[in-house]
Image (cartoon, rainbow, N blue to C red; front, side, top):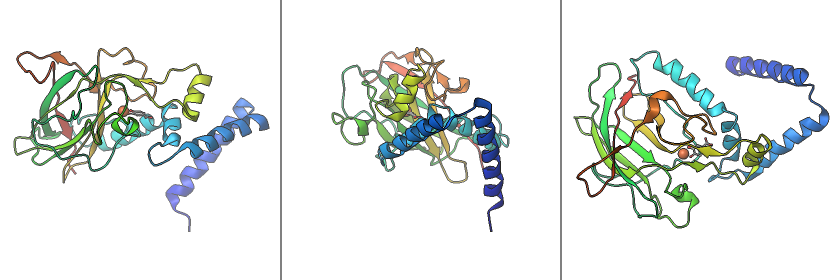
Length: 266
Ligand code: DHB
Ligand code: FE
């Protein structure tokens, strides 16, 4: 017996697809060209490279669905940290590090080190959360994630940190760099056909998770980035835009960033 939710969304999808075709008078040739692009994206996809996700991301779908999911969950709590899309470059089992450690395993040209710190808090009560895991990842100064770049050591610029009872975290990372989403495949071709650029503003990814709370997948964005208002995958939200401040008296970092994460309790 068909699942009622599946029945409902498929009926709606069919209606909208038919309306779309009628409204735009889609021809057989156009339909086949569209299918070719989808087939090409499927063929490009591997475990390392989810080209179908990239394709939907440049249409803003993952960001829209993230917003819907956040709105449903966020209504219960008081201004929890906004969510943002996972994107294609998270890896499981990033190294477990100690508070105060750096995720930078190799100093590459253009590296600007930053000290990042803050607290993990309960959105409703404002109380610190013990034993929360902060999983962080970002690109090198060349705009490549470690798994895209043979010149970076394995698991470079990735790490997991665990809070104590004060909910505090502290780590060293890089001030992030803007970079193009992988655009050598069908998603890049579609961007080109639409005269769109592939750039994402400089960002750092996080998953903050702990028992009893809804896992938070998010990103923060550098306010000064030239692409802050035109992210190719539409993930920027005002509350996730941050300022990297100059840091004095720390030989390990030129920039300072304080940021608190507020989680929704179950
Ligand atoms: C996408 C997201 C990212 O965070 C990224 O670094 C590259 C691509 C995406 O949504 O396609
Ligand atoms: Fe990213």
